[in-house]
Length: 114
Length: 113
Image (tube, rainbow over all chains, first blue to last red; front, top):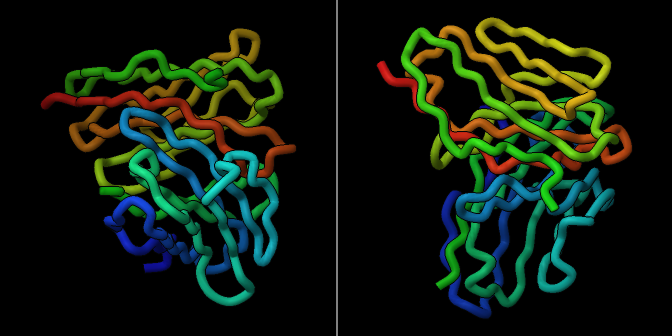
């Protein structure tokens, strides 16, 4: 499967724990985007990364959330001290970059905070 | 403030008929528009896109129309098939945002046999 791979598919965390969501982009893609979808809502942009660089983090909450895309390995979205309101589906997308190039999405990680 | 609006949460259509999904936007800087289809428990799948220099783009059963003066676009599916039943998201971006897609809330399409 050469598509965008996200893991885990489902993640349950207790309030106060840390959540780590992983995303491996499509082969040849160096641009990664994270989106969050709350129930009954559309997808909301969180952050855009290229290898080792954060390009746009305008959608990231100011506290507890961070993202990285290291030179080797998957992109990681990290949520510290999770709260119930963090429960959502988190989608990663990747693209080859450049203007007007389509982003291809992974299947998402459904985070549930109990 | 929603920059991309899909005002119909749901749409029901008979198999073989045309499905028309609508989308409005407010940001005149948007210059590229995309439609994604999403099944439950899966990620969105890219369907079709259109640049603001065009007013129509066609791909098989799917056609997207763009009316820049009205800041409106629509997705036409003809003929509709039961497998088209899914949630359809309209998304927009502009060259300066480099991939920051702004999504609407989606329209759930049900195609009845």
